[in-house]
Length: 113
Image (cartoon, rainbow, N blue to C red; front, side):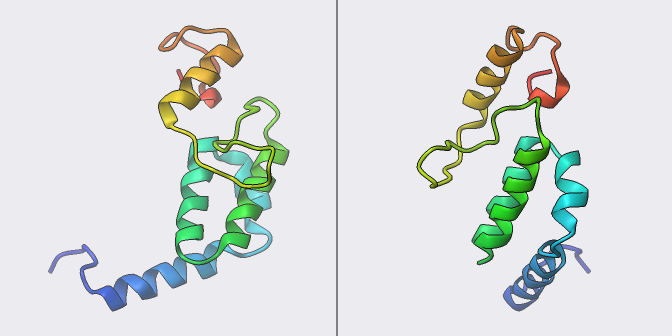
């Protein structure tokens, strides 16, 4: 038997269980500061796609509040509408932010090390 979920009902149930688990109000405060921007954005994208935009926003907000080094959180801010930014573009911005050339060692949190 394959461990891959192929049944649509099983997938739907698994996603619902995932969202129920990750929407715990304390979890973002415990975990989001430990994740990098790309990880939080991937989680937020999944939560939004699963119909939980408030939970996604909470994860992004808590991560952004706890992240002094990054300064970029995978979205274009300013108009209240979060839009994903291309990862390569973000890595270039990160490298520019820490002063390293793309591919040179820098702060691993910035995503370009």
